Image 1 (cartoon, rainbow, N blue to C red):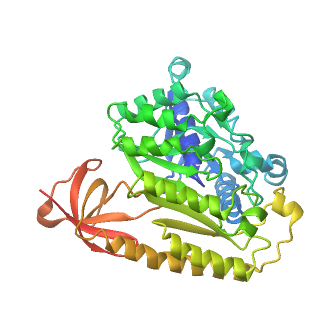
Image 2 (image 1 turned 60 degrees about the horizontal axis):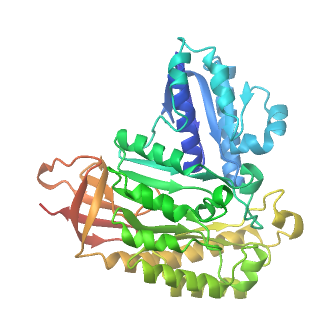
Image 3 (image 1 turned 120 degrees about the vertical axis):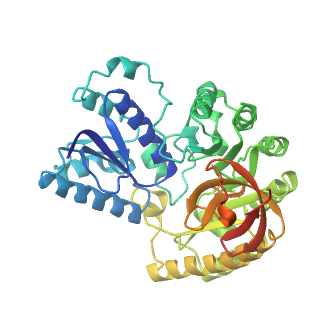
Length: 442
């Protein structure tokens, strides 16, 4: 057990990761040493940042808490703290069932953890803590990219989604605070910003009753040192179309948009409470592609939602083939307590049917992805190098977000001395369904 060290274990999404990074920075200012996702936990304190979105994620979080509780029981851990979405949603139940946890914090009160641990820190860090800006973070990503969270919460209330129950109403961060954070990130060596939120499309509506995302991205793009900006988790209903002009205008705004569409038939869009029709959704995708030529669209679909018929699923398969999304993920419906679907619909589609539909849809997407990737062969792409892996340098194009999208593998011929975090022109020589291969253009 290492005195003065806190092990942070983050589960779930990149939005959770940003929360962990902020807490770690403040605890370090208070005198602690923080280690993120250690291969072997050794700290005297362990903080588990939990996910509570769907059943599998909740189970993973509970298992991790139990694992660390066992370490504490064996005397290998002094203090166990749980924060994040699971404890935001189920704090009372967790406190009753897992009393071996010393403290629970949710998504919005974790500053209390800093106050709790500050008193026990190895040295008086009050002065340094006072000078630590709220947006400063202990970056856990490679130093050349970071996630940038611009809002919290969601007002959409889709039938299947527990996020509003966890995060509450949509709350935008002030624009100037975000821009200050961008400048700070650039000063730390960050070149690529992956902009995230539960709902990008609503940014600014609660601040000034208007869409402010286009002007935010426009101003971000003009900050010196920002090389790439990539947009995640837009919502199709009431989408701020002025954003497309900003994307077309700035070379450093990646031609990439992550926009969750979930389904295509009017029947299912209605059941899911998406407040959009298939015709409106299709028209938006056509407009996006027309205004930002060559854009990469990533989407997420949901199958097995109550009420989804075989006809709905067949229509969805045909739609996926017709739309030819560059990137796509698919989830099987999870019946989450407290959601509209949980209260008003019967979860009557067998789990094996849900999973079979998800697999079938992903098989279609794999074929589409293979065809789209093959079209890149012979082209030259701007690639940022993330790491060296065996005989390859591994990087990404502007069309690929870290950890979830495709990668470009450059064989290390002639012992090229590439710099991680730098950009290179790469000629694509070969393609697979989800990866590209290429060579550096000298």
